[in-house]
Image (tube, rainbow over all chains, first blue to last red):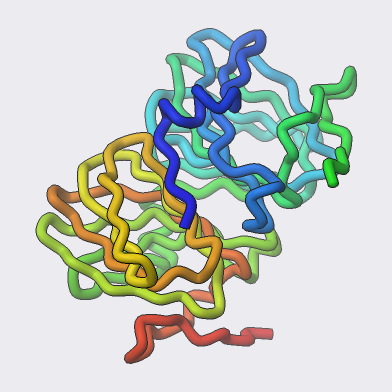
Length: 129
Length: 129
């Protein structure tokens, strides 16, 4: 069994901060679960364009309020605690935080933690083995 | 994109209540994400023995406090908000809620929603296609 607290994730160097968000990677590819699991803090006022062309992602809102917009269709949905969205079509999207939000994210295939956000908003696939 | 609120999950019949827990199935096998995603409420005082022999599961605590015990080793870990455990070896375990807990759970392979807890604490694999 793997057990990890937030403090342990941070101490292991698996907290990444960038412009508008903080990502705590609780489970990565090397953990062998077949998915990765992240707690992501979205800052108040953040407006993030993302497009994970190589990964499916689900995102559950535990705290805060915001909005998700599909750039394929233009459709928007309000986000509140208990709302989940799943990018089952590798959906190009914009996520906005009206307030700070705490999101729980699952990636399939799992990310390695070495990915960089590319210019097109995607993560490249990385092989770490 | 799939977007679901708690109210929509409940209205779709994807909230299951049993002895000591309530499971809200936000994503099931049919959603095609390659994993299933559930919000599970563990009741205060619950003591649940589980053994998912056919599934890997990760569990993140969003609210509440409790304890997880491995029945393979006897080792126990305290659970608080921000603690995650992953049953990467199909670990036979006991989950206890000191208080009501809100847990976010990922299953690989995804569950169909038709599984029954078996006498041995596992879920059987179910084919729904």
